[in-house]
Amino acid sequence: MPDSLNIVFPEPNRVELRREPVPDALGPGEILVRTRRSLISAGTETTALQRNFQPDAYQATYAKFPMRPGYSNAGVVVAVADDVKDFAPGDRIASRSKHGQFAIATADRSVRIPDEVSDDEATWFGLGCIVQIGIRRAEHALGDIIAVVGLGQIGQLVVQYARLFGAGEVIAIGSSRKRLELAKAHGATIALESRAEDARDDVLRLTGGRGADVVYEATANANALAPSLRLVRRLGKLVLIGTTGYPSQQNLSGDFVSRGISIITAHNSNAPSVETDHDWWTHRHMGELFFTYVLRKQLRVDGLITHRFAPTDAPRAYQMLLGEERNDAMGVMFEWE
Picture 1 (cartoon, rainbow, N blue to C red):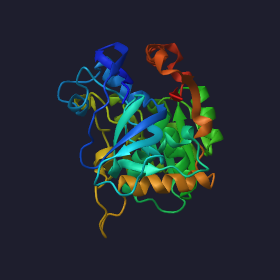
Picture 2 (picture 1 turned 45 degrees about the horizontal axis):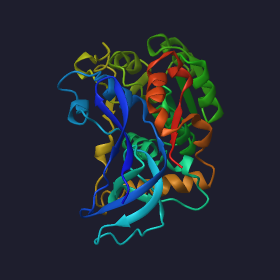
Picture 3 (picture 1 turned 180 degrees about the vertical axis):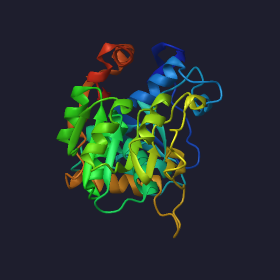
Picture 4 (picture 1 turned 45 degrees about the vertical axis):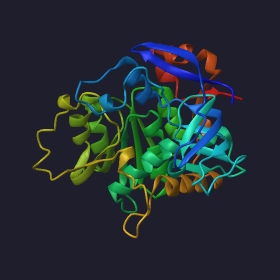
């Protein structure tokens, strides 16, 4: 087996390419994948690269250097462990694997890619599963007015899922005009060019003074929680679907208790590993549903891809995401083949 070209964060604020050996043997439940495409999870990976979080934040559990980033991979199966029965060499799969020429996937977090779905589209399945967790936890009602604060990758997918389940209005809130245009093109009924702290009057006007039934706070900015709460109607819900690196700096709004607002958190780790009658939606089942929506053109992720890089240009890709071009970027793809 040849060595694998891998993207590595050897230390904070440094990106490099390394030739590393491919394991000779696979562990239980493991799959060896030859990568075709991988998608940068911009918020997660740049936060880890900069080590932009407090010492006791969730990010400290995985951002350890040297670090192999990435969790959105589309490729072809090369080999499987003896106990893996659902996949075989030659299968095209999406997996929660790292940015690398060859990657180790786990069968429970991998999904076979339908023939009609491109590798580019398939790399979005991991983010699509994360958003499904939040959508389910919100327990929406038909006709809900939804506000989405923060229009990065997660926020853009929330907009599309909200349109899918029959929201009455989908209000996209952000300060980047290009991101607002993407949201409008993919399902937002209203776009507010505003920060959360400045959006309350507009949201109240658009909802007849009531406020949004559900607000998704998808910025991962600790300072966005309190102003986002002020957009929620009385007895409404706020879904925290972005993980800030500074949770100790998150504050509640002054009227949070008196208005009876529910705060719901949603995280990738909330999905069960094995389905039960009480909780069917494992990562694999959510991935299969994601591909069903993509096949029906009810989810459109190809239009969210803004940049493509060769893996050897990885330092430049991350530099772009940390610089002034960040707001112009959405789907940043590594093309391995």
